[in-house]
Image (cartoon, rainbow, N blue to C red):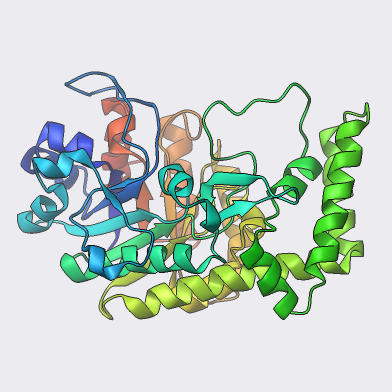
Length: 392
């Protein structure tokens, strides 16, 4: 499979028209459209938008005609654009480019609010509505149903799955706010899920999860009651020390990885055998931080065959360093794809972008994707064409 892809949204394609957009993509030397099939909320600046420059997508909806019978208690909500047109079907019918569907699985505030018994909960029992928990049976059934549904109802070439795991505390909700400094130790402790499903699963795996939950709650409460603002470097050292010294924490984190890997394996088994299945392990920088979300890179590569990594870095040397580390962790398992953003805040000059492309290709990454058509200026899109044509 050749994968030279552009990430895009249904609202941008609906506005421009699929034929015109496809012609533009082909002109850039691309062969695949990766369309968001399920997505969360946002506020997006569209440099070349025709019907307005700022867009607010409907939160937590799907952009394909879903079959409710393929889901359990949690069912997808159709985006309103489907009442007028099915952009995914239009893409498939054009038959000039491969169509890959990008599925945001468990990062869904709309469904979390409607299904509070299936969301992540911290050590105090507070619900994180933006994250359906991968340990919760109904959330797992939803994620599996989403992948099975779109691949059985549409002749897509593949899917790229994002957010199959535990979303970090500091990523996920509108207008996050605190009148105190945060730090990696506090955010990581607050991000641990102790919902009933996680506690029961961890105890089955041999972790004294109830005792550990009380310990984490006590540590967080003691910090919040203090007058200390821990500097970032110290907080990172404290967190690493906790992982090294606290066996329950280490085992709890390992349990989380097992939960995510098993979910991804169930998804792989549920879709059409001919469909390429890639997993986007994290948007953590660098990618090695994906483990906190339950993304074991090697295990995911062995499970799906493809890891599609966000190389969202500001220069080519950092991209090259991340690639070196990812290869070390994959240990030869699976195929590695790369996603780049040819613009601010990442590769903000053409030279840096071209150097990053060269670094990935030299490192054996020949399947590339670019994020995101509607967000990029025309000048930045032209860089993609230059890279695909091999122009220095």
